[in-house]
Amino acid sequence: MKPEIIVALDYSELEPVKGIVESVGDAVNWYKVGLELFVSCGPDALSYLADKGKKVFLDLKFHDIPNTVSKVCLSSLKYGVSMMNMHVQGGEEMMKTAVDKVSESAGDKRPLMLGVTVLTSLDENHLSQYGIVTPDTASYVLKLAEIAKRAGMDGVVSSAKETQIIKENLGEDFITVTPGIRPASASVDDQKRVVTPADARQMGTDYIVVGRPITKADNPKEAAEAIKEEMGWTD
Ligand code: C5P
Image 1: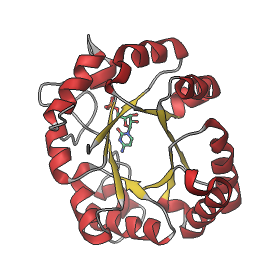
Image 2: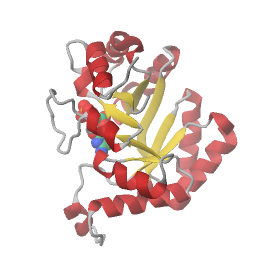
Image 3: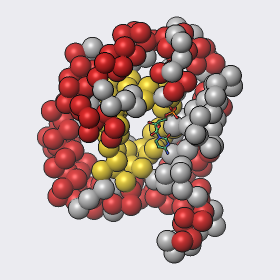
């Protein structure tokens, strides 16, 4: 069923991570390990999630020269991650080199490789400050997504707002992963542009990244089940 939930493990210690994964149980298969957890206890967290049979989105947003990024992508393979990402701004050659090297090494077991387009914390003022001339943010996101696709990437991380334009122009198979999800009843926290799970599904996104609405819930498993229900999952 689409979209699949990826729970963001934004922690700096392993204990709360174990608590969440135990309590959510089989309601969720995917977890996101970002910079905070990775810098604090990355290898232990990744081994723990692999032992639990969970799929991992390694959200480290690589951005460096092609040689460095392709090597760190290759190093990520030892953890058996299922998805990783890098900034599209790092360049077409950076992305292409990384995809080629990882494909060469992992063959058909290659993790999904995604481009980060424009962070949702940045807006049109940021683009104009940096001299980027574009009619609007969505057009620029689409331009970056096109470059990612040309480089061989599987998809992009984008706000739900841009999912439709990306799918329309780059095809249904080009994956979109969408953070900023809030069930209708949940607090928005510090997120500015949120969409509900039902809207995200309707917009056609493939994966939704959900952190606090699940990790801070009194009952994380029930919170995850409620989101699935809101998206029309039937199992
Ligand atoms: O708790 P919450 O659901 O807001 O967590 C969202 C997760 O998605 C966090 O790990 C955050 O860093 C990440 N993210 C985001 N917006 C982006 C990119 C990543 O919220 N544009």
